[in-house]
Picture (cartoon, rainbow, N blue to C red):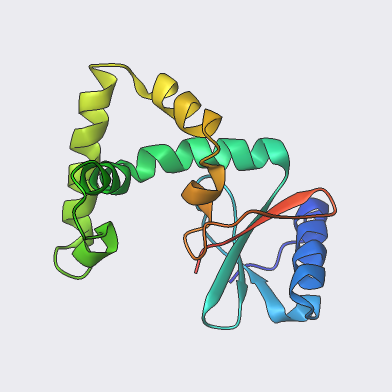
Length: 151
């Protein structure tokens, strides 16, 4: 885990600690990035993104590209009223295969409408919370930041 001295990350950590009602020392900053931003971990079973409004929009735009496989399956299942969810797939095929499928869907979109119109349309319909808050599809707001629980 990463312990950042970046004042913005410290401010985000403080906001998340207030939101969760915990001490800042209980929150760890991720080493890597998700959708272009560092996440915070609380304990072993919860992770969060804490983002300003513009950051949340950028992160959601990035998430669209990474979740095309999920969006496609959800849309197909909903359109045909099929009682299944994309997470049913997890554990049945390899992550590498999911990433390859996502790349192929990305190519299809690139050669049709392009990624930008898709991103804009998805966010116009208020899908930011659905794209970023995998745990509960909820967008919380506190002290100038949006908080999304990842898991």
